[in-house]
Image: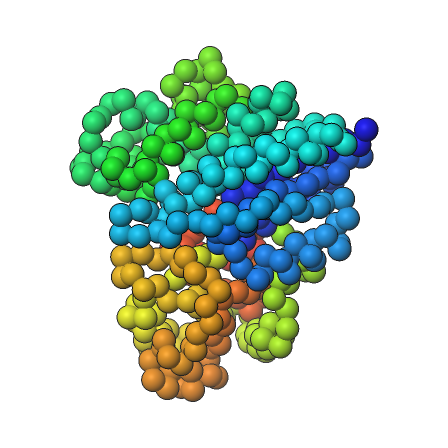
Length: 392
């Protein structure tokens, strides 16, 4: 029977791209022939760019296939339900779809491994019950992994939410961290996402291994703490950990050009005509955005700086308290969200792009000299590999 590896990313283009890069890496590193299938959810964080991206991957890498899970409606994030809690609930509700799809594949293939995204813990038991080795793909760095592994221990040291504490937390492999600076999903114990994250962190040691998109030279202290067992509440229960980073798309990978077209050619041509290391590139992730008020402040700052820039603008948020876009498909007019006349006044200095650019290619361009980023892990690795200075 054919041998296959199944990968299960979280919803959203960023997590899908990371998992596809893992698939490419697995195929490149292993001469033994097998195919790879990625499960993709439908109904949450969908975007037309995902379809064009997977079509491109399927064409350029025939050993990688995609299986769309049945559509499931997701509940909208609100003032009472956080975005992270909504995401966890949606993934949890897909457990039956994952089980049936995995069973179907097992009828015609030998599944050698089931690799789940760090947020897909609800699928861990599915693979284990079928006797399939289950591995986590941890899409953040080693320091974040050390924090997650240590969270169950911190949880038992206090009954308060981190957002309400002034304490400085001592987490192995990390610099001292104010409690209220912990990752957003674990700040509030009244948020369902906190308990979802705690469940995930407790189950990390129960996997057959953890694959981390990082490397020791970048995070020596975190890697050392994990290796010595300092990050785990029970040092006798440490699964194998594999550091395989930096895992990013190649600069000229055709599959990275999800939205190639006139706009893409326009700003790439513009970059070619700029002096070496003269352009500031601004992008805040696949879902990162700002309110219209904040966008106008950034625009004013760019104009006053008189620096050359390439700025990626997402659909503005409706909620001043969040920087995440939940609806990534709505079209909008740039002129309506930026200061009056901004585009005309800066047309010789900068260019503004809606929604998306092939980031690896942009960062690799010799005219780019700085990166203003939300510092998501993919962006950090891409900036490091390109050798471009970053500011958060």
